[in-house]
Image (cartoon, rainbow, N blue to C red; front, side):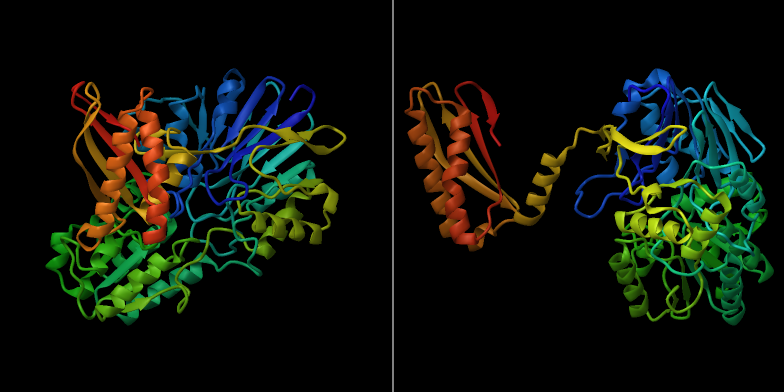
Length: 562
């Protein structure tokens, strides 16, 4: 990154994946960051709570950072902020009102003091030495969503944020006129949301979803209605509240994130019917047709409210035969089996279930192909780089761009860390910055690496075998027969012969090593593992994690060699 005349654009997260969005634009000694998200771990990342971007490059260039700009308040765009602020000095955060409230709540929960969050609107303009930044309103599944236009010495860069085009939205429409105006003034590079790039056509209007939800309320006026939806979909919550009030129903909230979203939506003025909220206890004393239960758990999360209601473990709510359960959502990739499990449990309880497969009761907040084309046509960029999506989504999105007249050589399918260098003459790839995945495990950030994850996978599939031996190293003697215990590998009572063989082999190895003049615990550990592996492979067909534990009585200490 030596050429100070070039404008650099790169992603620390969000390319080749859906989540942990974080994009950077740098010119000379100024750097701005767009979004700071997290990604929720796949099933194979055992014990991991979140995946965040690697902030190493930002730490190395901390003095260049002018600010963090947030497009909207979803977790994959703001969830990493607490971790970022613990690592990097961010002078200012610019965020729309709804996102600011969510960020404040998040920082408060983690006891992080930060006062430099500036609320922006479409009228806001931010100027630095090299950048002229302005915002344009988009339609998404959360209020106050925006795209960002970044004027640089080498042309304008536009990042759409997450968006869809809805001509009859619940809430304000996308500002198509401002997008066209920015496009008319010239856009060098467009980076556009690719989440639904595989889907042809246009997305369903939110007004159609609301109409269908209203039909369910009218049709089942005497039944208790339980709705599971994304807590962050404020406009959906707004309509549910308004529909409940219209049908003289009270609303009981279940799930911490649902409580938080309704609280913030009320504070920001999106929900104005807070007087109809009741407690679970009050809900249990009303007639079924007088109440609606609004729950988290639309993705089948085991500990979420709906899952616990479905399996009968919820402390306050029990299913009734005439209940109507509505999934006003679609499964996020990877969650389909969990959602199906919850739906099956509900059917087993005899309740009626509505899903988006049978009834249009959910609309994605992300643009499909025809809407992606409209975005490209509005901005008329010279160059195009899709972002926010898996590789196949990015690739298809570039094909869409080519259909809209952008030459193939002017499109880029990038990976996290790839650097685009923009000059007045054009754009080219010029290298890579560090952009690894960082795992968050409880309070541990980055301490859990691939080796630990591999061990966890091994433990989860093959189990653990511990061999515990007492020795007196001063007399070089083994004190008694080594004991063997296992977890997740074999049942001791049903494999007595194998246990005895392991004990006998361990006893032989330890006694032999103790007689060695160059005796050390590392060699003892390695030899026990090496000698036992063939036995376990032949007898069981798989090898667990072997934990050789030595208790050295003579030194009054324990040596854990594992």
